[in-house]
Amino acid sequence: MFNIMTAPHLPLRTYYTTEADRSLWVREIFNRTAGDYDRVERVLAWGSGPWYRRRALLRAGLLPSMSVLDIGTGTGLVAREAATIVGDPTRVIGVDPSPGMLDHAQVPAGLKLVAGSAESIPVASESADFLSMGYALRHVSDLPLAFSEFKRVLRPGGRICLLEITQPESRISRTFLKAYLRGIVPTIAAMVSRHKDMPELMRYYWDTIAACVPPQVILEALKTAGFVAVKRRVELGIFSEYQATKNHAG
Image 1 (cartoon, one colour):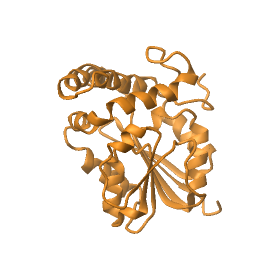
Image 2 (spheres, rainbow, N blue to C red):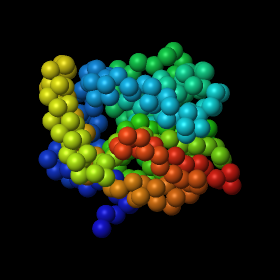
Image 3 (tube, rainbow, N blue to C red):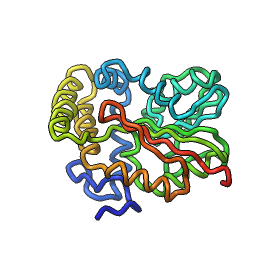
Image 4 (cartoon, one colour):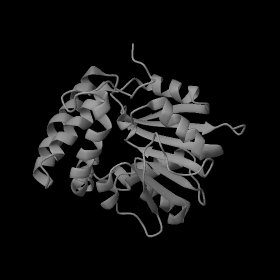
């Protein structure tokens, strides 16, 4: 039985040896590939990424003038869309453990970028109205600790929107998705990227999807952390949008 007191998937020893090595390995490969990340992401999402992220944030309740924390911000793909919605980039803070990703982030002037992780967010308690995370939940080291931090930094009534790719239920769809993400995408990444590690990152991308705990475990972990109105919306059978609200009682 998987213990949700640990990371969202067991150690992937093809890439790192022990659980203790996970965070460092992930941070370093993102550091090395940061300069190519946006280019490969456009291939991965067929150019639909900005539109989908914006719609998902709106569905989760992001409104103009809200203050936003984007955790695992990477190169700022979700943070940019959040800034457009709230109407003021200074109301958005992007947090990421990878210095390389932060260095290559392309965000509007005024949007603040800080080093940190989902398990240790460097902001004051109850300082944000909305928290987002785009396709980084699989890379955290401790789900309950991360969700506890999410609750800490949100004001009462604050909302979260966690975007993830989830294995489809159909075996045929799973086979197709694996062929695309673990076969086709790494091949394309090798052609369009400048860093030799990008194909490995893309293979790791799929392997974390395949190994990740089921959506129900994530939903239960959010409820256990004290969130209410916890739900999951699914687009195209693979794009999970986890939504939840911090109780007004705190």
